[in-house]
Length: 626
Image (cartoon, rainbow, N blue to C red):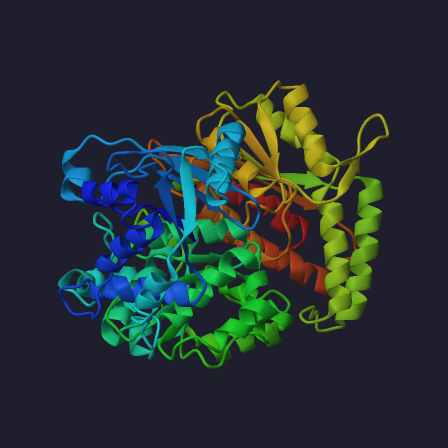
């Protein structure tokens, strides 16, 4: 910090300078020296002087003095100007301030003008330039001199042995009460039970809760109880995506926490984290809270800081299944004793080893397991209509499908096992892309939109492959859907993909909620963590065989929202022509898919209709026993 201040010179001081009795610098030094106490006690604002001395001694604060060049009165330099800058060259400038008195802060009518470089570049640059000229003593009518050495030495005599902290007054002791469940939010019975079971498991375990059932609030409530029981010093929240960091930050603030967000340049978060770790003390204050993306968590920069985390640290992993990946789980710190994982689907698809490693680190899944049915029964999620749309592959697609299926069956062997084989996984992905972009889906989508009288708040989930249009042009699936909706139906729709920046995604979601956009067309970006409660209708044109994707998506769609009575889901289910070449391995995979679809159909408001549609598929594959 660079600080320019003015000494308080009395009329007597001014007269002495004018008469030449004493030099101006001597008078200024005398005035400043009189303001600095020789010794510190409770009557001399001890903590403030120690903080001032500490900052100067560490090179964190540089002070200069401003003196009016031409003045015969006892005036002072009284301009209120400041600039905040970050390492990326952004600036916030202000002019004006309120005096730190009861009159200035409470009684008076004060104004502070602020300017930002990203909104008002010219004014902000002018303020920055004015300050730089002032600091360099290039401003008319004001002279800038260095802080007197003798006064500086007197201040530095008060430098404490260790970094000072805020005095332990009655006000700061109330910090313990800041970490609380927000007023107006009440935990449901299943959330209370989950928290109690985690506490009884000595602060370890995984909570398996349906998407939309309040995992975030439950996780923070568990941390809050642990803090009150054991004076938690640090809460580390790990999220797979950047947008989840900002969502968690908002929820943390509602609980009275002030999180440090670690997901951009380390130049931005490293100083804040280092400062928090070095100033930490064993008090009853709210815990230091750090929210980090998985990619930053596994970085060398962040891992080097974890060894400095206090003993009373809790690691809370959102969408904990992501932590089971090989490179990620190697970074899980054994030194952190308290661990909590959250997920609607903690088991990792095709990765028994990763799943076992997760449970070994975080602990087992705790009761109660809160299912979709539970969430619907207690009205945590809204009711829905489910319409499976059966789409048969054409001849060319069917040949490729059967070819891939035969290879999968050969690799799986007679037992029909496919888990844990990367070769099979590759073939499954290839087949999934074939299914995702099946030609018959375009006609099915056209019929859905054509017969929808209330086209708004629609989500469209596409595959990540390409398709050939009627003109022989190859298009990404998402672009083909955008072209149809905006071209044929004149719909206001936009892509929502990984290519969008965070700011763009936020703006798209706002436009979607306000109905400026009728629909969003996504690939996978809306699968985990993005809150889109205003969604009324979803069209799933493509989905993987991984049940997690479907579970995450339905949670996005069924979230409660003001005025939202129920939701509608169209789910395109692609199937090949019946063939004698389908093996038991192939039928086994179809069986798993039908079990998932049947469960979801059975919970819908139109359960009989949805099940009747799926029955046709069961007959097709001789799976009527499901």
